[in-house]
Length: 89
Image 1 (cartoon, rainbow, N blue to C red):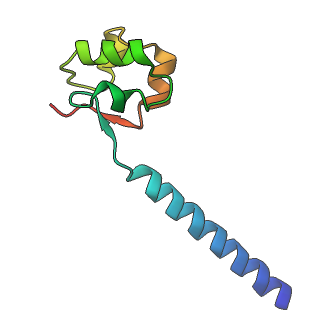
Image 2 (image 1 turned 60 degrees about the vertical axis):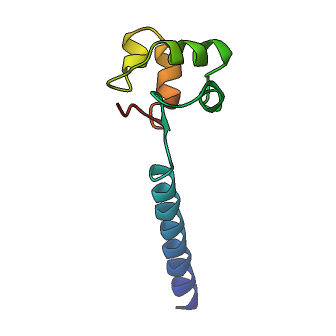
């Protein structure tokens, strides 16, 4: 009986931790591709100096996937950052 309670408690703690971790990730502040500086953009995975300059030069963006459709960054790079960006006009 003791092992069952211990296992159940461990499972509850694990599920709670995963839920909190997911909530923190989805509530993290996103980078606005219409107002971020080049330095802020370079923090994003796969975005270097050239990509940051192209993002700034291509503004405004009405949808975040404009980065991909306007060939500002590659589809692979877009997939890496799409959850980290917004395009607030």
